[in-house]
Image (tube, rainbow over all chains, first blue to last red; front, side):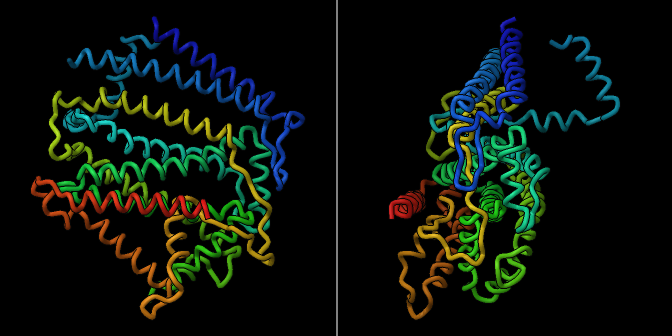
Amino acid sequence: MRHSILLAVVLAALTATLCMGQTDFTRKDSVHFVSESQIQFPDITERMFLLATMIVCMGGLALILNAKRRAADMRTD
Amino acid sequence: MPNPRSAIRFGSWLRERLPVSDDVFAFFAKKSVPRHRHSVWYYFGGLTLFFLMVQVVTGVLLALYYKPSPEHAHQSVSTIINDVPYGWLIRSLHSWGANLMIATLFIHMFSAFLLKAYRKPRELMWLSGVLLLFLVLGFGFTGYLLPWDTMAYFATLIGTEVPKTLPIIGDWGVGLLKGGDDIGAETLTRMYTIHIVILPLTSLIIVSFHLLTNQLLGSSMPLGVEEKRPAIRFFPNFLYRDLIAWTMGFISLLALATLIPWGLGERADPFASAPLGIKPEWYFLPLYQTLRIVPSTVFSVSGEFFVNGIVGLVAVLWAGIPFLDRKASRGEKSRLFTVLGILLIAYLAITIILAYAT
């Protein structure tokens, strides 16, 4: 049950990230950083939000893996 | 969640069509990992493999848009960053991933060295690891030119001058790499071919061999360390631990790629003068700094020739460590090699710091 909830959280976070990718992250008018060669990155808020979302995804995955590891260790011991 | 009965049915269906012998599963299942106070170092080999996989995936995505010609290379990288959805992130993951892969490889190699994991019967595992180090450095060198910006162009121009002083193969090797006297279209095509075909294929073979030797011989137990608890099975117990380490590694990579996205300089102009303070990537800084501190003539030979000779000699000795350290092969402590390893780490660290500071 706990794994299913975590998996749902991971999938929800992943979906949210992908949805954002289709909107904010390809938007040119939200770009604030321009380098000497005119390359443009999304502004820091958007990048931070992307990072936070990915941390939730990866953190959730790590929790699932850790639960699996503990179960495997208990079976072995 | 998959129904266990469906999973069993699918398993039976698959085994009917892929009748793999049980011996194969037994071969993979027999591997175990020792547990002791230095066990943490076992994770770095897996992390290096993980970052290599990230490089392959992001590299394939970049190759969909990259155009390897002096006219289009810079523009195509700019397009990847500006116009391709998530292109900036993929490119940053690739560039930062390369750095993390080399960093974890160094940690893996030096931990293997200090724990004497190279000793008998793991000599071939060590040799394949050293070969992988050179291949990974080759990836770094060939990939650096691809964006075709000012820094990449001049760093490659200077970098290809260094091996020229090597006897017999120097001029020939550099000519083969550059495809002419100058850094131009031929150089870019060759670097790209080496970067995406030759090095990946060679790495695939060597990595497979390295993993096979690890599967056959298992992880090395350090000398003089007691195994207080029984070794854990690799499948699935250690694999879960490895995967958790990979997620942590990926979070670190994502943090770097999103918070400090990899930039792109001005398009390279071969007729312009080299910018001041040009430096290679951090993993080539020890060589760069050594070339700076060595006088132009040493023992009546050129400084570059002298440094190339020393670096070549150190590389050969480094590869031959398992055959030189006879004490470790006999299961005895070999303090001399430990001290040499620590001195080498200190030298690399100091030259990197000096190169950045001066």
